[in-house]
Amino acid sequence: MTRGNQRDRDRERAQARKPQAKGKDDGLTPEQRRERDAKALQEKAAKKAGQASAAGGDTKNKGTAKK
Image 1: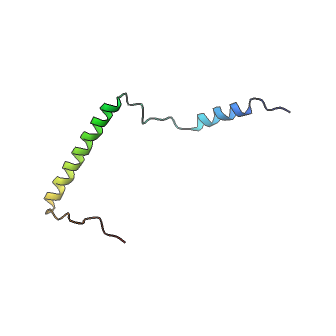
Image 2: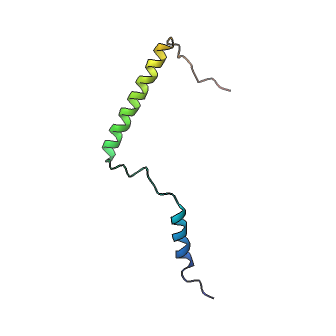
Image 3: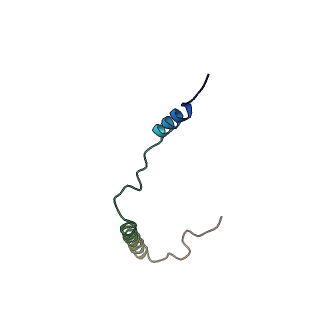
């Protein structure tokens, strides 16, 4: 008995089981994506700096302890 199209059918089934890629389809060019990410990082850093100054500014060696 021959199994001519079994490989093709299996590939189709495997493709159907995979979740669709959704990360790359945001409609932005690489340059626009870089700008968006840089802005997000700056906002995150500003927020963290604001929290550190509100907490007394004692951020020296915070979270770097070795176990």
